[in-house]
Amino acid sequence: MAEPPKRSQLEITVSWKTLLQLFVACLLVWLVLRLWRLAELLLLGLLIAVALRPLIQWTQRHRWPKWTGVLLGALLLLGSTALFVVLLVPTTITEGTAFIEKLPAVKDQLMARLPPSGPIRNFANQLLSSPALSNPEPIIKYLAASGTILLESLVEFFLVLVVAVYFLADGERVYKWLLAFLPPVQRGKVAVAGEEIASVVSHYMLGQVITSVLCAVYAFVVLVVFHVPNAALLAVLAGLLDVLPLIGFFLFAIPAVAMAFTVSPATAGLVTILYAAYHLFENYFIVPKVYGNRLKLSTLTVLVACLAAGLVSGVVGVILVLPMVASYPIFERIWLQPYLESGTVQKHARLAAEEDPQK
View 1 (cartoon, rainbow, N blue to C red):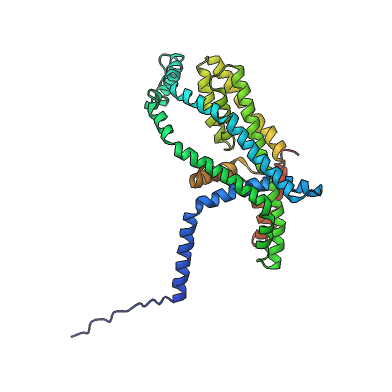
View 2: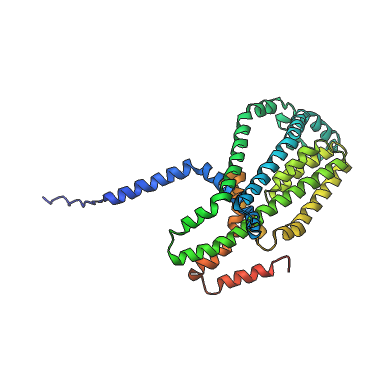
């Protein structure tokens, strides 16, 4: 009788060191997930502080005490925020509530001005078929119940401003303290990259504030001139959504055109033309002048980066991702160059120079 074949055995030995490493890795992942929101707020505060860094440098060049620069930065941040809250928030809340209450009337006015049949009428019926446009009461109740969320958002925003002020006061010392942990070679690379990245971030943040304010002012003037209802609300919406590249324009232009349509189709057409003209003027004139050559990003790069960041972290991610992506050439030149094909960095620099709109 033949003997049964012997079964082979596989033995896996896991050391205590490996188990400890797995535990530490899982703990780090858990901490990152738990503290992700805090990390976003800290990064926003850091971006604001870096944007105000030229103010600190200006006071230092004039041999003023450091606390004067920090005080000026705090007054600028808190003062502008308080001004926005006092002057614009009550008006936008009032107009927003009135706009929601008038949604059924706005829908009826829009439908009355369209042809009685045809593809435009069918498209409008599908677009305006939401029950909220016929009965806005659930929206008002939802917004009233969301007061806690709005309050939490305001608290988080002021927390970001406070963090930014602390970064202004003590950020440089903390940066040098952390820099001391690195070996000398990496310390020099980080020091060089830090200055260039700070310049990119500063130009981005200041440029975004300027473009958003200009967009809001332009929208308000256009809407007031043509007597479009809720001009202040739509202008604030334009300024806020202008932060979002590409998609932001459509998000604030569509409500404005819809409200202009309640005045007359001709008004809607003029508002559409003027909004589109400003969008082109901003992209091809204002943005190159404001940002300079610091933020050299192609439209495709901006779109992909914003979509990815928006899916991960929403609006905050979109705000954070662009200066990070714009800093990639710095990382490529300082750290990645030895691992890339010869001449890659020079080719990328030459392509960026050829696409520079200021040349």
